[in-house]
Length: 81
Image 1 (cartoon, helix red, strand yellow):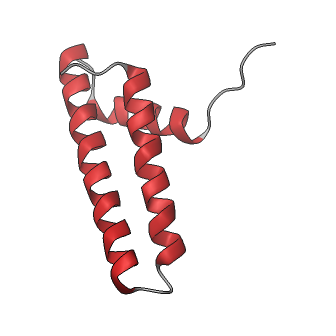
Image 2 (spheres, one colour):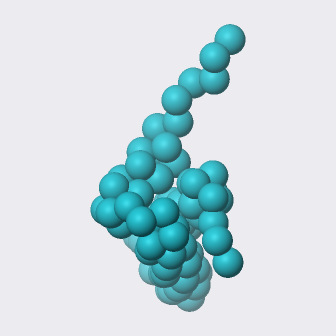
């Protein structure tokens, strides 16, 4: 399945949100932490695979795609007024 750049950004945001849950639960540990860590890991695998697939399809360096996706996901440019 081909992913658009916007799809990749959304997948990265999901992974980032899952990571935030892991960090929030880190001090408590336990089953909730383990479940959050697993969800983050699965989300990260999905986004990494999608970035690789997109880079191959676009014939662009994978690193460049990954950096652009993370930048847009974490620091979106403000919409023009």
